[in-house]
Amino acid sequence: MTVIKKLNDLDITLSKLSRKKILSLVPTMGSLHKGHISLIKSALKYSDEVWVSIFVNPTQFNDINDYKKYPVNSKEDINIIKSIDQNLNIFIPSIDDIYGKKIIRDKYNFDGIDKVLEGIKRPGHFDGVATIVKKLFEIFNPNFVFFGEKDFQQTMVVQKLIDDYFKDIKMIVCPTIRAKNGLALSSRNSLLSKKAKKNISIIYDSLLFAKQNFYKFSNKELKKIIKSNIEKNQGFLLEYFELRCSKTLKICNHENNHNSSCRAFICVVADGVRLIDNLLMHNEN
Ligand code: AMP
Image (tube, rainbow, N blue to C red; front, side, top):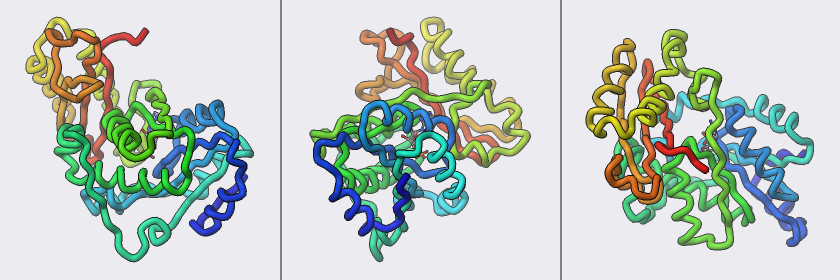
């Protein structure tokens, strides 16, 4: 296993790689959990050489406190990756190596898909995501890249980046891995208070409720019921619940769900910890 912390060393290592090798990249911000592991295992199936990057990217945080609070566990992450497969490779760059002296968030045009949901609540977030993802794609020039459905809007932004700048890269979107109670695994879950953890299954339960009642209620009614159920829990706040098309992110409902692409997107703040999730309102065949 290779662990590289300096961009120069990485460049040397990558330059020695045979061009015939299929290279996959799994970008992460570390504090790895089973969701990340599933991405890494999928990447192993697709490729000769898998690189996992671990970098808490400052430009995608719109709130400095959120950035400072973000959990960091590099040693543990390396052990987790080692235990998956000895042939995995890890890149843990410094901020200097990625950004130099000026930490700048580039600006992109995502045709509006960055202007809804997370884009409203976290201004600049997707420009920050694209900034780091573009840098990593330029460094690694991967054949395949792996992202999670859990951050569905992010996968759309990355696909737009690929369409605009990296036509040869193929993105594989991996299904959301959940805890037994349905909670989507997230590095942020470790920040939840004991009290919040007790009732946190309400997020996935709300998505299931929406799916089960998609044809029974209007979007407005669904949101009203879900908001009331969530906010019955002290310290829980529904930031958004919206039904949007998986292809365009335009608002959809049971009347215009012609291609079965309606997806519920939810964001809940539980005792100060902001969690997102999403679910397709139709069963996938
Ligand atoms: P992060 O470290 O949170 O930036 O996530 C790195 C990658 O792992 C992103 O592509 C995420 O969408 C993906 N990911 C995070 N949580 C999960 C999960 N529960 N299931 C599947 N993929 C996930």
